[in-house]
Length: 214
Image (cartoon, rainbow, N blue to C red; front, side, top):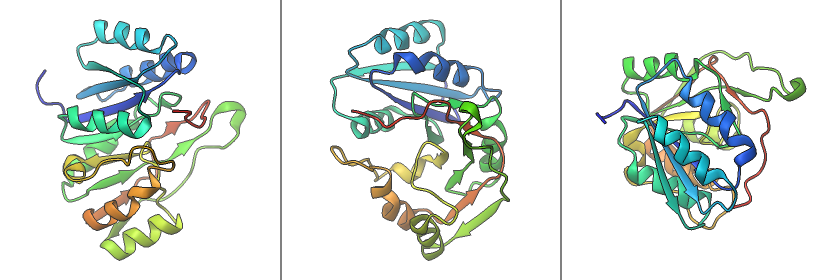
C-alpha cells in the first residue's frame, strides 16, 4: 500500500454490537485515500473476528491484535503503525457521516500550516442533540489555543473529532492506565500546535456513545 494521506485509528474492545456500523461508515467515506488501523485490545467477544473479516475484503484495513492493555495503549499502537500524513481517531461505537473527511482533508492539504482541525459532532439517537451550527474559527499561538481548549470555549479535549498533522504525535503518546487520557494531552498539544482550526461542517455522529470499560 502506498503512503495514504490519512490514517484512521480505531481502538476496539468488546464492541461487536456497534462495530459493523462504525466500520461501514468509514469504508463508505467519499474520501478514500486512507488506511484504517483496527487495534483489537484483547476483545473476548466477536469484535476481533469482525475486524479480520473486514480486513480480508479491504486492503486499506490493517488489524492488530494485542492483549488487553486499555484504550491508551491501543491508540499508541495505532500511532506507532500509522504512515499517513494526517491522523484521526474514531471510537468503535461512533459513526462517521459520508463526507466527514473529504472537505476537512482538503482544507488541511491546502493549508499545511494548520496542525489540528476539529469538526462538529452530534447525537442522532432520537434527536438527543441536533447537529451543531457554528462558524469556522482559527486559533493561533500557545496561549489562545490552550485557553480555548482548557475552558472548552471552542475546542474540547476529545481526539475522536479532530484531524492531526502527523508531526504532532512525533513526541506525544497517550498515558497508559489513566482515565480522561485525552484531557491529559491538552497541555502537550497546546505547546506543539501553532494553528488549530474549528470547522463548522462535516459531522461525526454519535448514535450510541458510551464510556469505554477498558
